[in-house]
Image 1 (cartoon, rainbow, N blue to C red):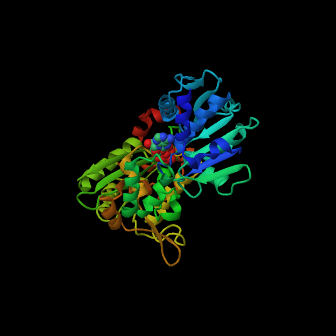
Image 2 (image 1 turned 180 degrees about the horizontal axis):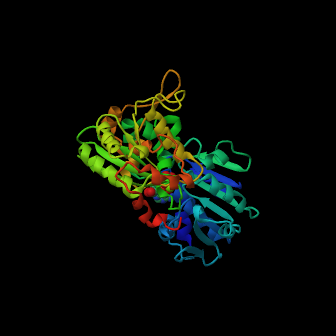
Image 3 (image 1 turned 90 degrees about the horizontal axis):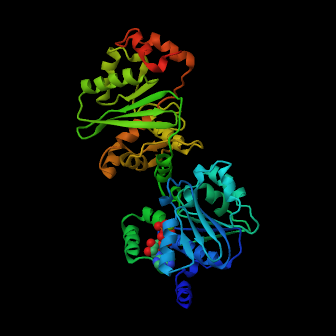
Length: 447
Ligand SMILES: Nc1ncnc2c1ncn2[C@@H]1O[C@H](COP(=O)(O)OP(=O)(O)OP(=O)(O)O)[C@@H](O)[C@H]1O
Ligand SMILES: [Mg+2]
């Protein structure tokens, strides 16, 4: 027992002392990597739960499996301290002396019924709170309602307007305690991490500000799309949609570029199909096949440079009503806001990723790189302009072809009515497609 107490004294950095000493409804610690937040929260909770009976819920936005939770960290700390009074179960941890229980939940999966189980919580620890959606947060706050209950929040700020930050951190009320913690506050910060932080400070000052000093991205970055938006969309789980299919086709400009088809149905980006070293005819053949097999509502294609040839072939083959050529440099639909079509379409991606409703992107690292690497600028009239493809290519080492293909799916709004679906039969009158083909597909049976 004596041995344990001695270890306990030294292991929580002083900067976190309020976790155990201050009585507040909300305690929010934020900052950059390796500030010691996760460890200090885990240690403080383990200590508290040995002193009194507490129901502690450890929450994050998405918990696909228990592996995503802080359970492993708590187990490691229990082992580190040699606490004999804790018993670890598959999905919970219990203190056998006080009867305290730690439970682990993902907020995204909580329907109004399930969330009731959180109502008895004495302490809710929200880890990585920058990823908590507004919807989750709005449900959570009134659910942690037990008298004297506390909400402990650890986060690395991502955006200026992370919902949790806006609600609690930006203008804290008298029940809310907010403190910034960075790696230099953590006496246990590993040497490698300090070295990495200092190296980043030299080589990429913007990244240093964000990653290591915990500054939100938008304040310091000139990037159009914040990584968190892409990550969020890439970690969402599948949902059904009845939206029509739209295809974007970005065509390689140079030998080493890729031609990319992007398949999007409303809020779901289904897939990317990537082709290297294809000539105009080959690409037109692939596009024709997709148009026939998938029957998109529209295929928007880049007709700058090599795209024009592909477009002509598709027109010849009678796909005219289904395809629309887009010049990235053309005038935007809204010329007061955008210097050109390209800026407007990429801003379409930003709006798509920023909407309240969930959206889905494939888990593709190249796509992540493309979407998060584009810098934005404004012209003298305050209109959005993107840095040139050449500049991006220099930095990224390739051109952001997947991003451009996705952007193309936002070239113009696409709606489809039930009547229109029937009318498709007429649209193909002059093309290679036969009316009968449409009706042989099971999709159309029973209509
Ligand atoms: N109490 C401690 N005892 C020993 N090592 C610690 C302690 N607290 C932190 N560390 C060390 O510091 C590192 C960073 O701590 P921690 O992961 O808690 O920081 P964080 O603020 O949660 O960072 P991140 O944003 O990366 O999640 C840990 O990996 C660990 O090596
Ligand atoms: Mg952490």
